[in-house]
Length: 114
Image (cartoon, rainbow, N blue to C red; front, side, top):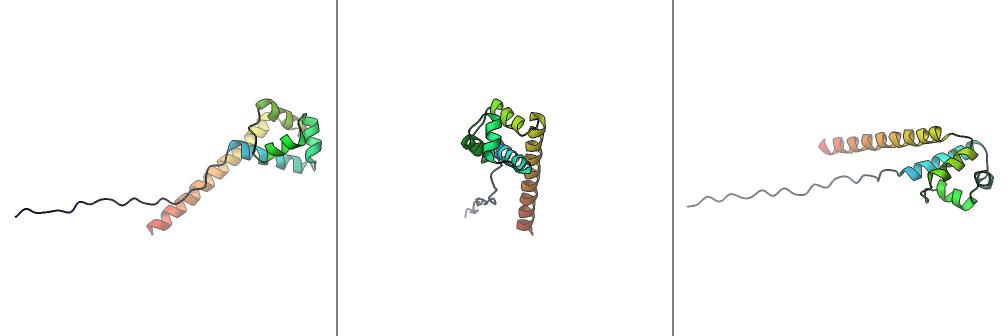
């Protein structure tokens, strides 16, 4: 009589859903809006000094546009912030959000193990 062994087929594991990584343009827009609000300025005032339309600046702030470096420089200048400082603020925010996502992912992983 021949022995039969069952084949073990691993079941697919369902990974917890992770929020998508934030886009650079989204964080840039948030930084621009925060800096404008900190100055107590209206959208139209900042846009006029930057030489862009209020609609375009609004779209930048909402992360709907991929502005050129010239446009970013114009808005940064209107807000009296350097490109280096603005870029550093965006990078810091991205790093903070990445660390938060990793921490949440680790907590989910640990709770599944327990």
